[in-house]
Length: 261
Ligand SMILES: [Zn+2]
Image 1: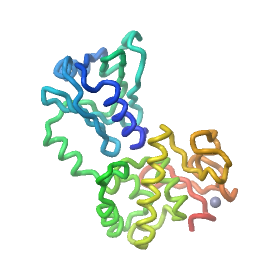
Image 2: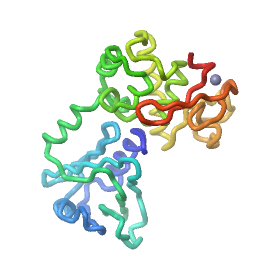
Image 3: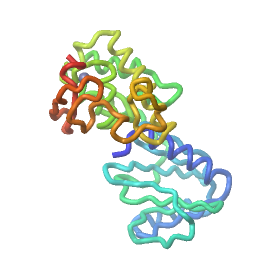
């Protein structure tokens, strides 16, 4: 599942490629035909991410809401590519074409719906005005394991399975610890590491958590087997300990028993 850094990149790319001109919208698959007809010919006024949710504001007072879910993709493609019948929504303009395939959600919503979705989400570490205090408060009062809490979008918005494992590694925190057992310093560290690592991800378009000093290569030039410490690895990339794998929040999580006690 794409994590928040990808949704923020998509919002920025939609703004820069489609902004200001009228957009052609269609639903080659047909499942979003009536929605597409309402934004066809309108201009994209803004696109923004909140966690894993993407909101695109069009002239004509239309708000498009997209959640990619587990298998959805929003991809920029050459405009002359034939539209296959898997494309829920195609947006094109200015020689650019965006195809949305397999989203969990794609609908037009009211400003009230949008506010309700956002009200249900925790702070997004990639938004400038994010308030980490909300996240801290929810973790402080929870007996749930921190590994599960970081995946809960009501606690913090945008973290997925890769980031939660890697953030807890760089913080040196065992994912099984109850939220309420974390110290104030640890809560501060989790937020700071989340912001730092997700900003790198947004800049590069992929998740890289390894410290460049350990590899001798900048983050943007690391190979796939160098860029993470614990996620989907057999051995900790820092100390070589055997990675422990458990299930938290309904998904598999890895941690290093040496670095995360
Ligand atoms: Zn280790």
